Image 1: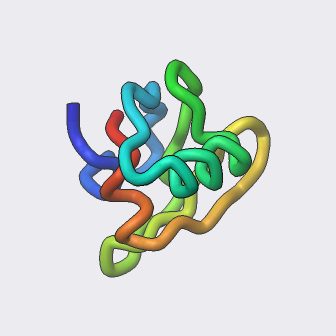
Image 2: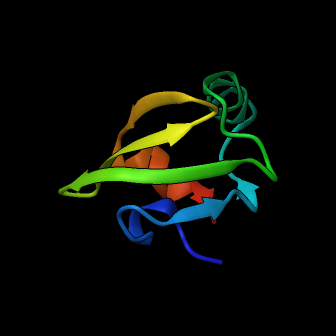
Image 3: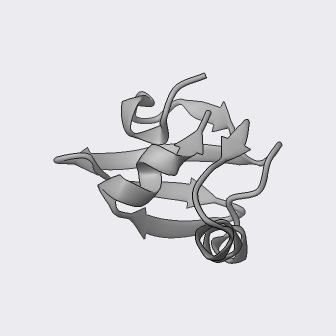
Length: 70
């Protein structure tokens, strides 16, 4: 398992765990980051990532991406 910030660009990964406080988890789940779901990193700049998740493109800050384990 590794944080989303370390995932390779263009490689599809499966979300294994979403960490953080309950409100952070709920926010990420509302964006589509659910355990068992697929996520693909489109671009990574300075730890901030743009990902494809559930047919949507979402930008995630480095702090949030560190809480998503793939």
